[in-house]
Length: 290
Figure 1 (cartoon, rainbow, N blue to C red):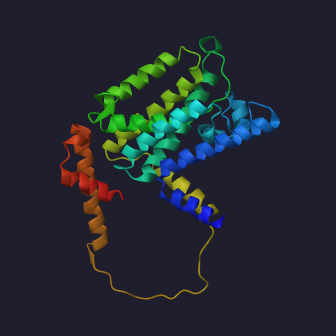
Figure 2 (figure 1 turned 120 degrees about the vertical axis):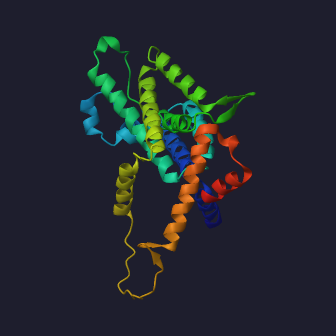
């Protein structure tokens, strides 16, 4: 049994951050399925759902994130996670994992905020009856639209044809705008919120501004609060010489030059697509993201 646990831990360590999110979504789904059999209710994860009414949300503030890990239907979970898996393959080959997490979680948050705003601001006669919000679609769409907006001319294979990412992004937006008049109006509202975040994030990043840095620092602080301290009671201080130039170490200069090359390659991808890269550029980008 110990060997099995070690194998599972080793496999989990090999997963990238978005694949770990897929695993978490799967675990939550099966917990909900088990609870529904025990309590004989289809609302077994109600404490994770994002309520429609602002007054109920105030009592469940955590639901602005947890709803994105809540699925009741297998196919709802399956298709969300399938898209997330393929997006992760492309996104994490080009960008830092923390940036991917920023986009994903901010997409979920903005999708939830759009949902709350629409159903607490607009008159009821404009809206269809909806329940609580569940599903990771807002976060998944935020990641996908980010890619579509950041490198719109990159081509991807869809069944038997190649299409540009911006065509895919436009089709998704049109699909969800139409969905505003359908039975899943609440879901479409959240999708559009996530897509708006992904688009804005991409445009700001292209201008050199990472809008997710504040959120990233907040998450790092939260993690540090729950992380056990590893301070040693005794500390030995050694003085050592450091070779600095203009106040920066050689390693800092190397890191700066490496990031500059990555930025130039990403700019080339956004203008001409991934296939425009030379083999040397592809190899450099692959090694840089290891």
